[in-house]
Structure formats: structure tokens, C-alpha cells
Image 1 (tube, rainbow, N blue to C red):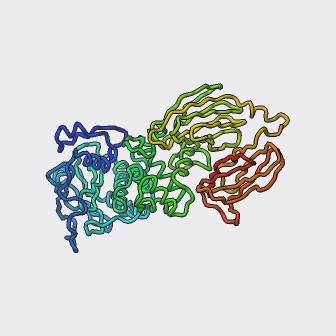
Image 2 (image 1 turned 30 degrees about the vertical axis):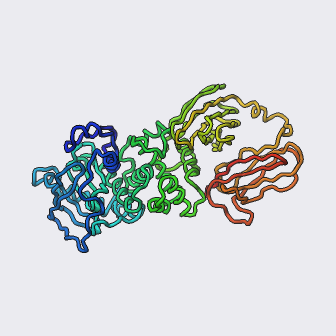
Length: 537
């Protein structure tokens, strides 16, 4: 990981000038190494992990043992001496950096590092980083015959590089910068947890997509008690919520987004999901889907992402908020007056959002028209005296629809896209005359319609308003995402007028439905209406 709060182009003294000039800004040393090797900017090491022959009994390591360690981009290995031996780690220090050799690293620095790794962290005074992360992410794969992890403290060629795990080295080994270990302890310790997660994850799934792997490494920092080792990452994402969760570009905002999503998954679904995600062979969105399925959740990636993007705005809503956000919220594009005609917006990636805030008390109607094929998803989060309400906007064909809300103080429209290319959309907003006259004597409905369910998401029960233009046959049912009927709420003939049904989260056999997204379907004569319900246990 690179030092926080800065963006620097690596110019390593051990690299040829052409390679130094071509280096890209980095944050995670492990990710930077992988990208450099993929483009040929860094040569492969002579021994590729884990191709080195395993010895049945590896040579013993004791305090004072000297070994050579390969380092990226350098033909000459680093000579280092063991300064600590424990049940979880060996701590080696580059000879030139040891205090009796004229270097700055003291035995007290080594002892503090070993205690942190083996015995005590801010998250748990009785457990070290290793035990906490193994519990959270799973055991490390042993590639060198030692039970311990090697920690190598050395002088890194670039002052902004803090630490990394190098999968090309046939050892269970983490590299740490002596400078940051001594001068920027919080950053270095968070980086140690970050890079250990990469090592653990590599042992279970060597080709995980970057956004998942980096998000879990960001979460590992929090597990060890050093959340947001780079304090710029989360604010960078909150300022740019259009940032794609799944398109990895290595900017601080990518780290911020993926960390928050991983932390959200852990808080909402528990530690079993995180372990399942690390061990799941499928990668990216498919891996999240299978991990959720593996723990018995009815959710899929799109369900978790939908609630997460809403929570990133509704950070003070007890039903939606999550701890890692700490009360912060994403930036909104604000409008203080009505009407607004054909406001243009665009998303350039999948799985990012535009958040449009209307500070217009009263009754509001928003027309949405999006680019065809962009696969838009949209929600409103309406705030009114004493209550707030999240609702999904029904979009016809994924690109057209209308949202209405009555008696609001303000409302946020959250729009995302499932298309890798994103797409443009336009919004028009005005005072809703339909809702404004709700206090007048009620006339019968002009057509049969399915209203917005509330509360939605729900925990114990959800109320589903619907209306019938004229007396006739009605079927109102709850369906699974696969279209199977779970519960028949209304069956048979009903009089014209406005009605309401209640679903308590059970199927027709009285069994509780799992957390997840469901459809509610209204059939009246020749017409069918469809809405979505989100059940959270």
C-alpha cells in the first residue's frame, strides 16, 4: 500500500528510467506489482511462487539467522537477519537498516511489530492481526513449510511505498517499509493487515477480481483496528458516487467504494459471508451471488448493492445505516425549486450512482427517461416529518418511469446502471397535482393500478395498496425472483375502488421467506402490474 493522502508516480531507483517514467499512481503495492508484471514493466523473478521445491523439514530459523530475500525489480536479493521468532511470525530486518549496522531500526520497533501481529491489536487486546484475519478470511496456504509468516522490514526504493505481498516469491512473506513502520505507525499497521488479506486470499482464490480483493483488504484494516489506513479513500468515493464499484482503476475512490461495500456485506450478512466470499472459486459479481447463496441468503449481488447505495445517502436511517460510513453520506446534485425540465445526467460505468436531491417540500412528481439498453435502476428516498421512506421506481423496459411522493420535506432520486457502458438519462420534476388534491372527496380510480408498498424494505410486514377501476376478478400475489408464486394475497372478485393488502413475509404454507427481493403482481382482467418488495430479516 502506498502512503495516504498523496498520489505519486513510482520512480524506483532499481528500475531503468523508461520503466520509472511509465509507472502509474498506486495505492496498494500488491496490486501495483501485479499490474507491472502483467504489462512486462517488471521482469518475473527467477523462482515463481510456489514452484520452489518444498523441503520436508525446512531449515530452522532462530534469532540471528541470516537469509537472502528476492525483491521486485532488483537482481540483487536483500540480505536480512531474523530479529524475532514467535508462533505466528518471523521478523527479519534488512541488515543495512539495523541499528548496529548504522540503520534506524531498533529492537523495540521489531518487538512492537511482533506484538501487533501475534498478541494484541486495537480491535482486540488479546489477539493479534494474524489470528483476527485468519478468523475473518480463512487459513493461509502454506507454501514454504513454515507455520509462521515471514515479515521483512526493509528500505523501499520509493518513499511512498508502505508494504506489499508478492505472489511471485515462494514464501509466505510480507514486505514492510522501515520508514513508515517507524514514522507512520497507523498507516504501516493498517497496511500490514491489508497485505495479509491479499496473502490469505491468494491461497484460496488466485484470480479474484480486483474490486473484491481490494475491498476485502480494506475491510481487513478495520478488522485489525486500523480502519481507513488511507484517510483519503472513503471521502474520495463519497464525493464521486458515480464511481463504478466493479470497474477497477486503482484510484483512491475505488478503494473507498470497495471497502465500504465489503464492510456493508460483513455488517448485514455476518462473518460467514466474508469467509464464503474468500473461498468461493467464482469471481466478482458471480462470486458474491454464490457466496450469498452458500450462507442461505435469498439476496443476490444486485439486492445488496441496491440497499448499499441507498444507505450511502441515508446514513442516519436506522434501517439502512451501517457502521463503516460513520454518518457520512454521498454527494448529491441539489435542486431547490420546481419545475425542472429535462435535466441531463450520465453514468459512464455500471454499478455507480447519480444522486439527485430535490429540496422542494410538498408533493413531487419526477419523470425519468433514460437511454435505451442502459439497464437503469432507480430508487427514491423521501424525507418527511417524523419518517423517511425508500421505494424502488418501476421503470418500463429499464429506461422510462415516474416517481411520486406526497408531503415530503425533500427527496433523493438514486439512479444506477447495470450496463458496462452506462448511459444518459433525463429528469423532469414538478409539483404533483394528482397528489396535491388528495384531501378532496375521493373519486373512484380511473384504472386498475398497483401502488407503492410501504414500508419497503420491510422486516415484519408490508402494506400493498392497489385499486380496481370496476368490479371484477383479481389476483394479487407475491412471487420469487424466479417467478414462482410464494403467497396469494387476494384471489377472486372484488368491488371497484381502492384496496390494501398486507404480507407478513410468509409463504402459502406459513413458512418464513428468506431475506431478499420479491415481486408483487396484480392481475385484473386483461392487465398485469408488477412491483418489488425487499424483505430484511
